[in-house]
Structure formats: C-alpha cells, structure tokens
Amino acid sequence: MRNLVLVLFVIFPLVSYGSYEDPSNVVSYAINLFLKKDFSNVLKYTELSEKKRVLTLLEEYVDVEKKKVIDEEIKNVKSFSVGEVYYENEFCVVSTHWVIDTSYISKNVVHKAIVKRKILYLLKKFENGWKIISKKVEV
Figure 1 (cartoon, rainbow, N blue to C red):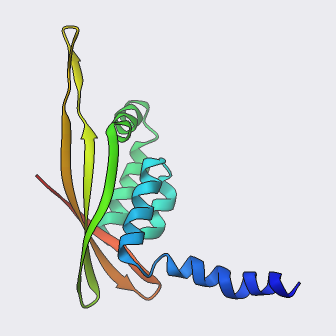
Figure 2: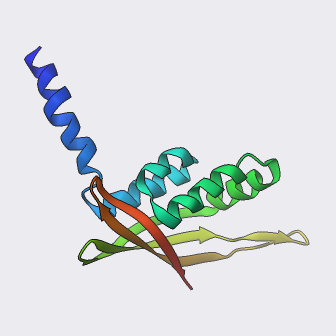
C-alpha cells in the first residue's frame, strides 16, 4: 500500500510534470502525437497561434477530402529528429530535422524524391511548463 501511495502522489506527478520541463521533449511528444494523428492531445503542448493551427487541423480532419490529404502527408514523413535548443529568457527555439518522401508516379514511371526539411519550433515557458507557440519551416 505504501508503494502505491508513493507512486500515485510522488512519482506520477513528477513524471507527468517533467514532460513539460524539457523543451525538446515537448516538441518530440507533440510531433509523435501528430504522426499518430492524435491531434486533440497535441493541444496539451501548444498555445497561442500554434494552438489555433491545431484546432483548425482538427476541424479540417472531419472533411473526407481534407482528411485524405492530411493522412497522405503524414504517411510521407519517414523520420524526424530533434536538434539544437536555444534559450532566451522565457522563450526557446527547438530545431528539428525531417525526412519526407515526396516520390510520385507519372506515366507509369516512379519518380523518387526525398526531401529534408528543417523546422524551428518557438516555445514559451508558461506556469505549467514549456508550450509550442509557433513554428517556421526553413526551405
């Protein structure tokens, strides 16, 4: 019984709060949820304009045609990795590197194309931890 109390009141709050303490973890969790199409849980890691973008995505995901496009884009993501983290007071920038397969078939010929993208996430520290507030795709 004592171990259960320890887990419920000491360890669990530390683990759940700790996920918001490291900006690179926040970005990684949000991306993984996005790739699993768990958009409503991505909202836990976003605020301001990024939260609005995710809410728009949730609305669009109901439309059958838009859902197909979104699913195809997610399917094309081959990998991502979290890179550098830069801090400036209550703000932070986390860079990520993505590998996306943009191959297509034209006239029965497969055109292989792998694109590498760098996406920068801007986070702000709120009272309950770091949240993604914006992102920028570098071309």
